[in-house]
Length: 402
Length: 139
Image (cartoon, rainbow over all chains, first blue to last red; front, side):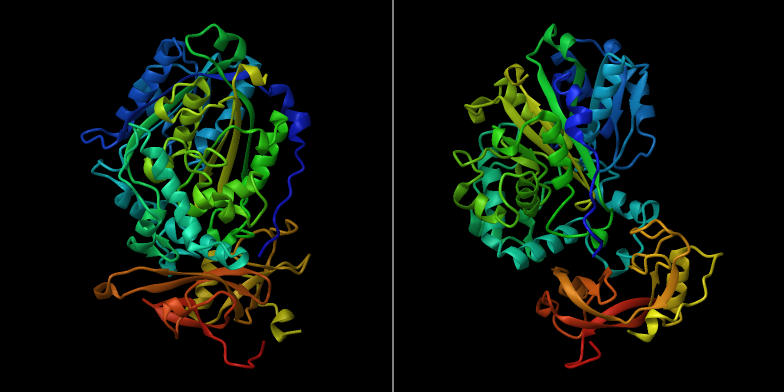
């Protein structure tokens, strides 16, 4: 019941000079889906190597690193060891699944300042296949990262937190169970066009509604996947990216906002801090939601997509349910959302942010195969972390948007 | 004005806010914090007022009266105890907390329901739970 915080940052004034100064020069995934016998580091390193090759660089060119892990609090150190690099810029910020999007702006400043020349943003997780998997990790975090005012009530986290947000959204705005299911059905329709997607079977609204209940109003089909996977991107200054192997994808805007950790401390369950990160990222880019050709948003649960479409400005607060109705975000709909199938149907190895970035890069480059969008100049990428706790928004564009 | 609004409890400087909160619950008392500067109530327990940054938050007895802000029925197998409720409760002091509403089926807990707190003892530790408020209660 605390008030929604206000930010005094004038992102247009402060960050506009950084618009388009840095580009994503390389991007790759590795081992998405099931990767038995793998571990977090192997998936990370193979994705990193592929992203560096994609950029036309070698690992010895990498002198900046941004990475984090769900389990290891000192993760950048073993990553440096395994990659054999000597970075002069290191960002180990860990704010959940939005981390890899939140890594962008500090990296842009470091590249602009000359602190480094090529930043590798990378992640890997074998949480589906690893022997120390998601269940053990969650049990350990009860001690390492306690939430003493929530755990005694046995919320199954994170899903119960999102269920509470969904229930409140339905109460305040009349959002329906069917509208939530539309999000999962649209994600599956996109996934069916993506050979990398983990779940590609047909999925109907009735299937979602009849699926196993987890925490009302959400069923198991409202919940993201548990998969393995690695993902990485390489950032360089724009001038350098233009001389490299692949068409540069420019970072036009980025902002991050965190208002709370626990869902019970969130000021308003129907307005996330994406309303702040989105506004500041768009202000830096000098663009707005209506200018976007696509939205790649972290759909950990079906309610997320509805909340973020509202908070990023694609529709008014409370109208997200109507926005996604009748295939509104499915292929051929009013807005292309999560064109890889998202965390709901493509890939979700614990933290999804890097994969949303990579799908935007593939679309903006025009290399997304049968799911390729006709218009692909601009994209908004949005990451979420914790239990609607951290939000980071990036605006990306091709050369014509500079 | 409630009596609890003016009855400040002693400030235990040697304990963390969480330790004090739990010790009070273990003794059967549900206390929340209040800022001596801006007078806002504060929950979850902490060191600094999130509204004005002031330290030295005071402990006051909570009225225990609240309204369900959101609710979820968590699915659990019947032989493990069956489905249960997780709710967010807005206390009339203007703070929100997670808890469980009992005394009715989990699916029957509805947003807007008026509820009353009590301190239950579970595994030797105090725990705030809620049940539907009596009609025409102190609210």
